[in-house]
Amino acid sequence: MRAENTVRSHVKGSVIVSPMRLENILPNGTHKEFMELCYSLVGMSNVMVMLPGWENSIGAMKERTLALEMKIPIFELDDIESINSINMMMRADGLLKIE
Image 1: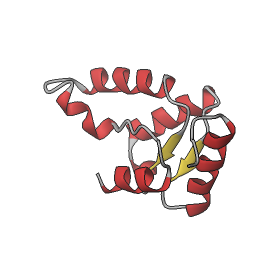
Image 2: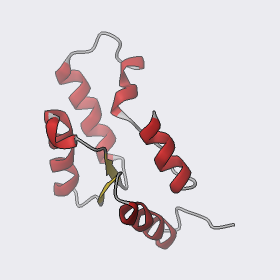
Image 3: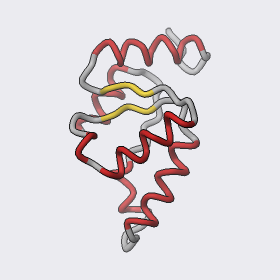
């Protein structure tokens, strides 16, 4: 949740979809079912933000590979320059309104 709050506070107007929240959707889901749902969510995303330690998660590595194949921009949460890049990209796409 801390990661979600960090992105939300730095990227105003963002909609956060976190795989960690999927237990509410699939309370008794198998790993395969979770991954199928995650792949669908990646496909609907316009940006992926990787959490520190993602390299240690087979699921995160697979999601990242899919995002790369789909040419979805990928940023690192612990890199403030990445967060600034997300803001610039969203402004350019008209997804982020500056008031």
